[in-house]
Length: 284
Ligand code: C2E
Ligand code: MG
Ligand code: MG
Ligand code: MG
Image 1 (tube, helix red, strand yellow):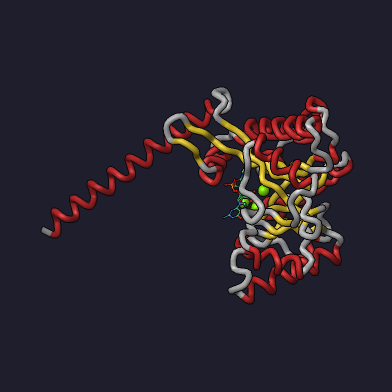
Image 2: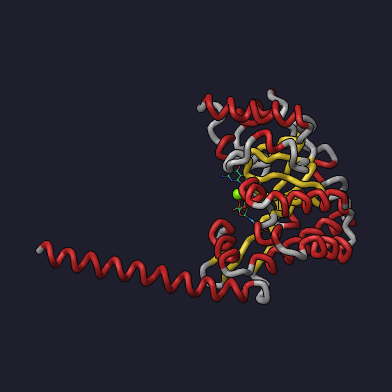
């Protein structure tokens, strides 16, 4: 009986593997067509000043509305896009779309709000990055001061001699740079001083346990103090509760992003949220 059981197990195992392989295969296929089929969209998540409660930025986040599978999370398809070499093309679309959207919102009354765009490693490495950014700004007519590019620390450390000068060049254009998911990688704190970074985004894994984990609280406090002394703005990601917000306000973390204020929103809803905050209808 043990043998039969083993066989059955093996069958089930193969079926599961097979299913995963097929699904993966069709997702890869479909991802190649997703752009042309208009299945990719951007949602925008508010970034709020912790003192005034004003909207200061929005982060563009990719959404894939698959005709059969429904909404597929970027955590699932971005790695596929990277593996398939599609991320450069998709990333350029995101950049163009985000710049045009912000320019459009500005014509509808939104002022002094930046749009943040996530850059994948392959985009940073790409020899045409600076041209791509220039042309996205030019074609949309967006002032570079309203564009923020998000990069991750792990990636920067891999090839600093190639990437750090690129960041300086982007910054010379007036674009600001954010370091995303800070704390999850391996960059040493002293390294931060050498990087042209305007804003550091503390990863949500440190924010989640504020109020219950004293170690995470100490880390967050230390990052904020360090950034202040280096003249870097601090943003907390994944802020969901009032106690988390109050802790961050008490320790002078200047920017807040998270469900406490809002989930990522489709463009129309974002504008409604933004105009209400701009007119001071909502307090902190
Ligand atoms: P990220 O850049 O760190 O973006 C923040 C993620 O945290 C988003 O997940 C956002 O929806 C989520 N989030 C925000 N506030 C909260 C909160 O209060 N609680 C919780 N639990 N989560 C919160 P999302 O949209 O699923 O994106 C996941 C990741 O996919 C992003 O992480 C980014 O690394 C990547 N990504 C998304 N769009 C793009 C893109 O256009 N290009 C590239 N290269 N990567 C992208
Ligand atoms: Mg990001
Ligand atoms: Mg992040
Ligand atoms: Mg992330």
